[in-house]
Image 1 (spheres, one colour):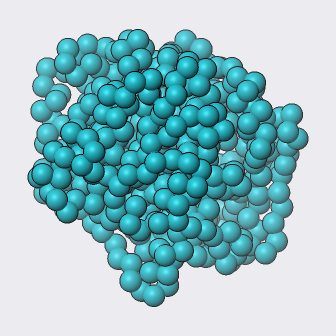
Image 2 (cartoon, rainbow, N blue to C red; image 1 turned 135 degrees about the horizontal axis):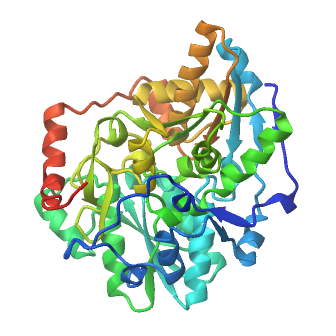
Length: 459
């Protein structure tokens, strides 16, 4: 398994995050107060989020936002992460393409999620907050925030999507080992959870449902703030350390990507790898790059969703977000890529998708595990089920290069490892996994309630 790693010194950890919304040619539509349908001010978010992240969320002025030195100090635990030339995968595919991956699985939490968890925990601590809440799908974000909370002396409560709570017991154990309180969602501990369970007692949960419960707990608990693992602008902002490092590392490799690929749930790791490269696409004469979001066929918000305003959670506690959505009541199938089971795409990525700066593909569960297994056997790293989607999209593009005889350079983000997802791999190897597809009728029914929210709003 031949590999070549391109490493930067610790001193090359970025000193600022890149805020793409300051430079987007078409600014995204405003986030709206659902009661008034008027644009939100950052102060409207203060009851839910810490003030620093609230201000970052709506900042359209500053392209670069300084990373606090205290956060950079914590980044030194694992950053700069390696950029790796995947010779083994290239050989296995017989492709003339050059394949590189940014290895975010080397963080102490095992994924890219720590990049924002450390920042959000720091800003909460600085504000004097003592308790934080959050949601998690597969458990990668919950694990990262649990660790960050412990490092800053905060108490952490995590609502974990119930089906993932049952499928991934060791991710739950990781959070508990770091000291977090973990509750399967929907639960009877919140009004939102009780309402959902009253309608469907056997509901396996969704990220939208877990978000509702976490927000409710945060807003009813003294000195407590909610923290989010994806979707919103400030989360995507923190993740840009990935692409900023990768830019310099690709220069060390003497190459420039023709395409940048990442899996897509709400958009945190996609934005992290893509935004720093995307910024050059806004300039005349820039080399044309493709930016490909790989989402599950079971939750295809970019490939089959509708661009309109919708809630970011199931109970309707969040502001209205202009995004590609499947409807906030969408009930995703129980795929193992729990981090990708979210009904909507982030606001900025939705606008970029709408403007043609990025594209999306949907990947079946079996195709994703086939690609992940091939990657493990050729590169020696077992990828998380979410990351398998990025690998599957990479394999598709590399095989196109093989057929066409084109020597393209592909960069993808390995967002996390799958060392605690072996139950999913066991099912795949034993032939017990299946694909899930949504009918047009079910999709139309799911989006219908979101349509009603858009009455009187111009898109």
